[in-house]
Image (cartoon, rainbow, N blue to C red; front, side):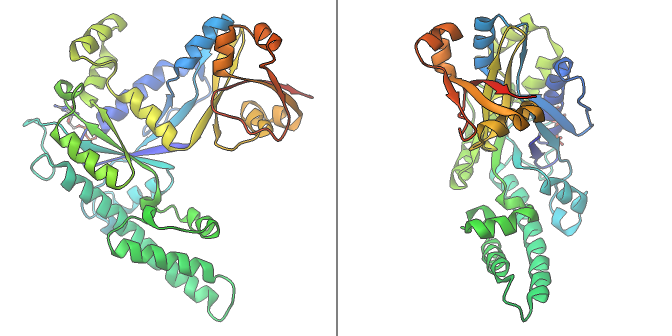
Length: 363
Ligand code: GDP
């Protein structure tokens, strides 16, 4: 399962947000009896309105959303790359994640100490990004040294040196590795190094409940920085999310209404992170259950079937496929078939976002 790591300075609201994620995950743990819950890992459901619509059409007993993982990576402070705070342990954890959610404090509260004395998103973002860049730089320099020794006097292995040098130059100039253009071959060589500043990033601007509907000047600051980095910003309120855990469904609706919002931002954050990871969803539906399945962009029908069960991939014959929109327009598979909208796709079919699929396979 793909993982997103939550980072940010101390006291910006990471744990509060993470606890809300975990509470959501626990709420639907019934759907996933075999999942173990680790203290700093939260497996969350990806919200998808299409599931409810399909479940109604199919009269499904159960709706099962797809999931992704969030990891709470505590302890990034100034000097982490030099071994301050949790330092290297922190950096090892973060290298394993597929995307980064960077929580930025955009709320004012005299009772909550800010590690640098005042609320200043631009400075905070710089502190974290600098630590990440320094960590990358020291790792890349070590790697370069090692590779140079290994390939001395040989023809092979020069490509990695070229790629490493490009990245080191960018990091020295203060540009994250994500801005370095690499060839496909170079990308393959660099990928296992888990460069922190090459991971896709989302900024979660944590605001107080009063600013959730409107945002504030700090959020705008975050937006400007994110834009320059081609990154997305999601407004969340950890405070609101932590309230929501405590109250009944009815109270929730009233509370959110009073704030002028539909949610506390957590659902949007999950969705945006899922998209950031380049993930796609296909759907299955029937009287038993309506369910969403995660695949990578470009996956073909047999591999997509393998996400459900390896037998489906091994014995794959074909897939009856219809787009979600077509199925909803026709209401039933029978009507869709009459209209010729259900396609029989073979092993080379590239599954599309929102395909509703029924796999035929040999056992
Ligand atoms: P972390 O160190 O980044 O994990 O931060 P925490 O989640 O522990 O939050 C630090 C403190 O800030 C806690 O007392 C939270 O209740 C509080 N806090 C988090 N988000 C908000 C917010 O949006 N508004 C206000 N007023 N307090 C918040």
